[in-house]
Amino acid sequence: MSFFLAASIIKIVVVFTVIMVGVALLTLAERRICAWMQDRLGPNRVGPQGLLQPAADGLKNLVKEETLPAQADQVLFMLAPIMSFVPALLTFAVIPFATPLPTRWGDVEMVVANLPVGFLYILAFGSLGVYGIVLAGWSSNNKYSLLGGLRASAQMISYEIAMGMSTVAVLLIAGNVTLTDVIAKQSPSLFTWNVFPLSLAYFIFIVAAFAETNRLPFDLPEAEGELIAGYHTEYSAMKFSMFYIAEYSNMVTASALMTTLFFGGWDIPFTTWDNTPPWTTLKTLATLAMFSAKVMFFLFLYIWVRWTLPRFRYDQLMALGWKVMLPLALAYVTVIATAIWFLHDGLGWTYDTRFALALFALNLVLAVPLFFVLDRGRIVAGAVAEA
Amino acid sequence: MDGTRILFDGFALLAMGSAGLCITRRNPVASALWLVVTLFALAALFVLLDAQFIAVLQVLVYAGAIMVLFLFVIMLLNLGRAAPTDLKGPLGLGVGVLLAGLLLVQLLVLRQAGPATGGAARATVEQGIIPTVARPLFTAYLVPFEITSLLLLAAIVGAVVLAKRKL
Image (cartoon, rainbow over all chains, first blue to last red; front, top):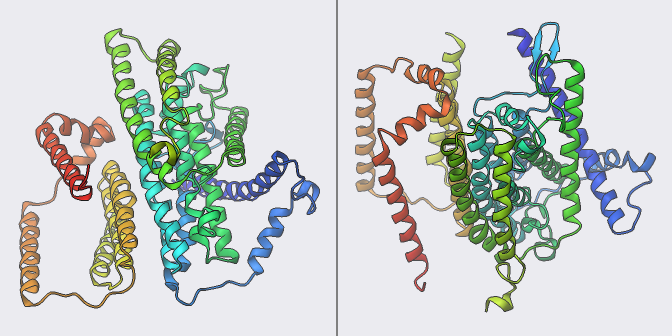
């Protein structure tokens, strides 16, 4: 019991520190990659390659004056940054990031809390992040903030449904809601990574994840062109910084989720050496490195997309969410459930590479008409085309 | 007192306290937030009953979706600022007291029936967390379940008809 307690506390401290440092470096990475894409240099003055820039920014935000609008709701105004920041970190608690680490006192699971309802916990806490944004928008007593908060709540609710429905397919394959089981089901080979048998679910998930984290092309809650800075217009110094940290923590969590649900979690492709006991320290380190590499790829994808795509218009965002994503996710769950039922009960296959490849083929067949329909100018049409 | 009892008392007090604050706040946003706290405390009580699935659904559906919609509507209609009292007259008060009394009587009757003897915990161990809820829902209670979905469908169609006069 005391060993469990000690291990848990160490894991919490380590995971928290790694995420915080990672978030700091991610802000730098965003600016450097943006600069690279725009053929500039980006911040490279503070420390080697600008590595100390996040520290300098943090220090600046700490010593800046905190402004408190006179007409704001004081308590909620202070509470809002915290409420947007905490759920992002809580979500990370159930994500397994490596194989168990053997120690002298027994194996330590490399997940902060291996909950039996891990997957649903993620959905539950993922949906709480919106409170911070909504309250920030409302408590600032500023019409631009209010509009940002309204947009945030509408957007989150809309895309959360599609996100939840897209992950139903993952649960159908895993047959369980524990994330360690979800990973175990994906580890036999490369093609059992859920991104292959459930490609379209992954497509829906990644679009919804971008909307949930308020990143371009879905950053309507803070659309600078229309709303100044949206929900955090009135915030300054450390409170503003906390919204920033929350946004990047959400990105880290969403990337970790994509890795866990669709890309095999810590599974190393092309080998089954890492999947089975006896656990060794080397396996833990190797799988941890694999997990980090996958997460970093998705973080890069986030930044890449941000500096590539323009922002949606608000009505387009809503139309996409309700008229495309939701029906698509619902229809997909029906199709994939039927396919799994047919393969499993009709043909008597057990879940393995062959099963996954059969589903992958089905996904490819479905993808062709889908992407033909999603073609620009047909559904995501401009105002002229709609009139 | 063992740990579970202390946790139960703590969360039960939190639930009652925040429920009280929810109905006494003038500011609709504050009320809604206290209701969220109540829902969280109830979720914790479900966890203490070994009903993790119900607890997570409580947070997911009520705190995560329904209360966000509440806040959305409050903000959309700009009801956010503290409003003057809208307490109803003696008639409203009487009906309220009557309903509260009925609930109290119900509670006392349930207390007579005695506590459940850890059935949920045993079923969870035997069948796993979700089958415990899902099996009865899709076998014994299938008809009520389907009727509920019809009810919800009717409500959605009604809302659309009311909102969009011209379809």
